[in-house]
Amino acid sequence: MSEERGASLPRSLPRYATEVPAPRLARTITGVALGCYASVTILNVLRAGGSSTTRLTICIGLVLLVFGVQFVVSAPRARSWSMARKLSTLGLQVVLTYLPLFWFGISWGSMEGPLAATVLLSLPGRIAWPLYGAVVTSIPGYAYAIGVPGVEVGYFFIAGMLSGLVIYGLSRLTDLVHEVHDTREELARMAVGQERLRFARDLHDLLGYSLSAVTLKGELVHRLIPVRPEQAQRETRELLQVARQALADVRLVSSGYREMSLRDEAASAASILAAADIHAEVDIDCGRLHPVTETVLATALREGVTNILRHSKVQTCTIKATSNAEAVLLVLVNDGAQQNDRGPGVPAGSGLSNLRERISAIGGQLTAGLREDGLFHLEACTPAQPPNAHDTTDRTSCAPQPEPCRLM
Image 1 (cartoon, rainbow, N blue to C red):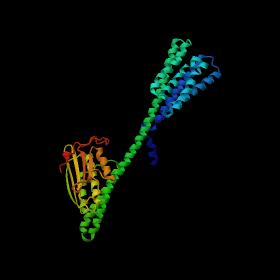
Image 2: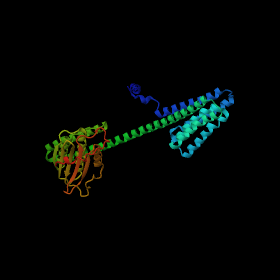
Image 3: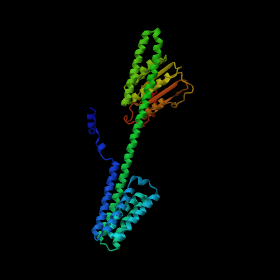
């Protein structure tokens, strides 16, 4: 069975997975183009006639040297060279372009293309383009001066200009291919990082609440067994239900985005708070909410209740949710908060920080802190319809619409 799976795996791979990597393919195309231009120069020298074996050998060696240097200059890493190194390479190409004219004559004239491309690749644009024009007209000007027919002068001009632009274009295209390839890898790393952050955040939100609930229920059952066995049995059933739900939630975290019900979370919170001897008043008057909004508010409620359970002095808690056509407001108010709790900003701690990121991602706001009435308030205001719910990078704020939500 494993061999069959292995044999069928390549058929399920995307097409691009079996193709040559784009950066390598781009460099190969550039190398082939340079090889073709090198062959044209050698053929021009042969066509001129009278080429001895020594003359041909020197020609081939110089052509290979010129286009070998050009292949190095066309590589993306050459763009990071120092200006001194670029000018040294440019000077070497100047010598290799013009000095062989004294040996091979005007048949060497098509070699101005690589030099023109290097000028465009190595120098700033305000200098490169005028100098490029000077390079592509230099050999045609020399040909005209020694009496070469006008047709051939035009050929050398067009050939030099075209080869320079082609080599420059292929080199820049290779640079872009490398940049796109590197950007894709960076985006993949960012996606992995975001997924790890989501997983850690969801585990914190789920297990912090569920383990606190299991602990409280377990302690209550332990106290009730000797005196109220029937109530202990009921609490045990609720404890098992919380544990099963926690297990199901953890499995959903590993599979991706999960939807949560604000009403279900409120009912569960009331039960957990009652087990902790905390009087809870719950009023959820929101109607049907958008799944993204409801999940974010349910997560906020879960985190708020988790924080309440950490304060042993809490005696009363109020959970209220209201909505209108524009926004939804969730408010948790409890006593027993410590005096060193922070004011109107979000207090320190990864749980509320995670909530602030979640709510901001859908255009909402989160405030939490100890108010003048001595009670701790946690308020989450979100749009009734999140802007572009599938793209959490949208930051449309619901700040202009908070007042209609404040119906308490």
